[in-house]
Image 1 (cartoon, rainbow, N blue to C red):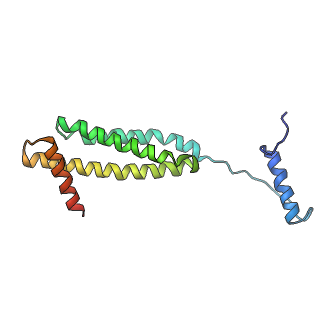
Image 2: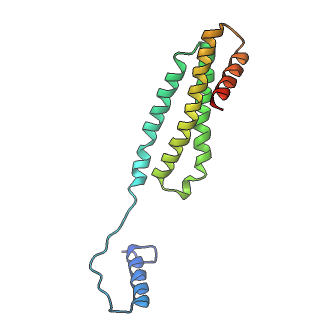
Length: 152
């Protein structure tokens, strides 16, 4: 059996008892029960990846299907860029935070970004339908400008 060091459960228990003895006084208290609180959210956060990726795929399908072929690739690349960039940016915060909290923040920022992407590409689809065939650059520029004007 391994010795009880400061990193082991028994070692921590002894450290807490010594601290109580110093602050309250030895024999002045009775330990009735001890309980341990262990993080369960790490397992739950590991399961969050599947729904997160599934929602990403559904969003890609929603964006790509109604658009014409030239814009499908742009929608998929923009959406993939949003998700990857957000996760990469949020990754620097991952070691300091609880996994479920990290997934919640990451989902929120990806949601904001995807919402903007969906709004822009819906406007692109409307612009394509209303103005006929134009150069892709002009369609994207007009759609982004219209969206910014409508939101400001």
